Image (cartoon, rainbow, N blue to C red; front, side, top):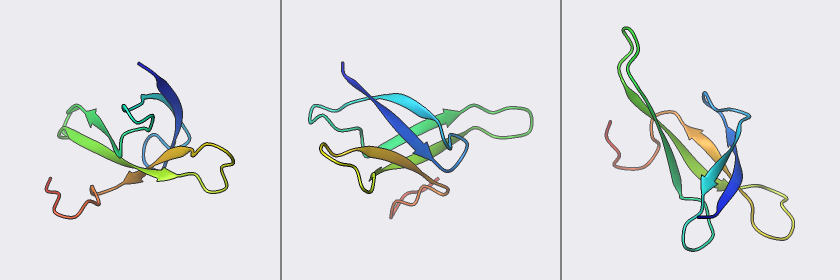
Length: 78
């Protein structure tokens, strides 16, 4: 399975570059979900990052993930 080194912007993963498995169409998935287990008095949660195009990327399209603080998708419930 192929992977792409993908940058994360915002949230706890801000500034990190992680390998993300590519889809059959050679793109990173539209959403990247990071499960965070419960710890102490904090309940378990899922951090959501949404794919966006890197501005000014030359040649092949490059992607990065931007943090969605409250899962900004319409109709999404937590």
